[in-house]
Image (cartoon, rainbow, N blue to C red; front, side, top):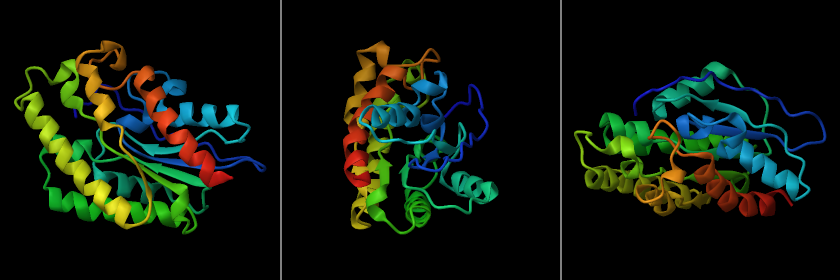
Length: 218
């Protein structure tokens, strides 16, 4: 997807006595074009704290524009050595945007999911994969060389792949894609850049994830 602003990797090691959270992804994880606290990982942290679960600020490995292979390289470069209490993974929109093969995505997403499980110390119940939103519903998709319908169809194909891989691995899958399509009629769900989600949409993602994470951390 077009890079409007590249943010650096954010690292926030968890202090003792708190749950640690690793968020892996791309612009949808760093919250491109919104305040950091409006991104879904930080809103998820906030919701969990409201429920009495002390979660440290998310440690984030994500950059706008990253594909699956670039995320894996970013993880390697971060040289993480600790384990985390829970992990979210949302990746693939840039594979679709660049026209990368779906078969390649399947292999690389599968590897990333296993990487996430490893960082969760093998606990599959502490890993949470999130579907790719449909950016074809945003204003920025208008005038793109692919129609919103084609974008939606391709996104659906990528999500069919990542959901199948995730479920087969015994990992939680949260499908935020249907709701993301509401951006076509509700501009309040779109950030000021006309492409990325707003804090309002991220709040919906966090609300969907929070009970699942809460149950896993009990």
